[in-house]
Length: 176
Image 1: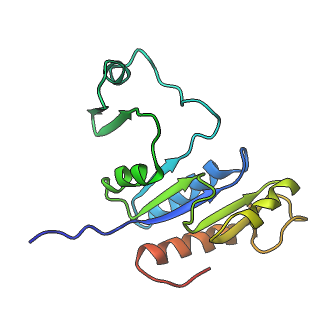
Image 2: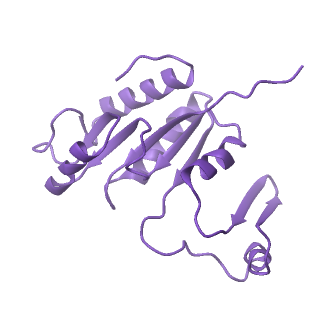
Image 3: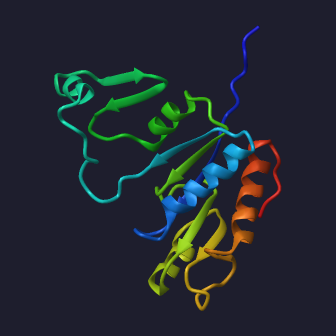
């Protein structure tokens, strides 16, 4: 009998540079792991150019020689190094899905239509609330800017987000 693969829930954490996306994602991952959930993160490198790689490593040398991809495994760690002109978000999600996660978290990719959390650090960031769609929760660094949502250091916001994600992962359809 063939096993039916469950499609992972996809959720975005978005905001401008230094808005706290990575820190929030780390907290979410820890909380979901405590609840037995498996998470894969796809990060958009939005700083221009390629992320740095150690050119002395075998995986870099394999790809430089012309390999489409190089997978290195050792002691339970698997590293994928693949290069092509552009990677679509669909291609990245397909690769992440092969790892059988319950949740795929997207860091960045602001303008995609997946449900998302938006981090607002300063006044200029408020434009995101008008430019983006499918916003489920908002986190603010400045209580004076706070509209709907949570102060970034308020544990109630984290509780709300994790509860929402667990519900979606388990197939529920209640919103925030």
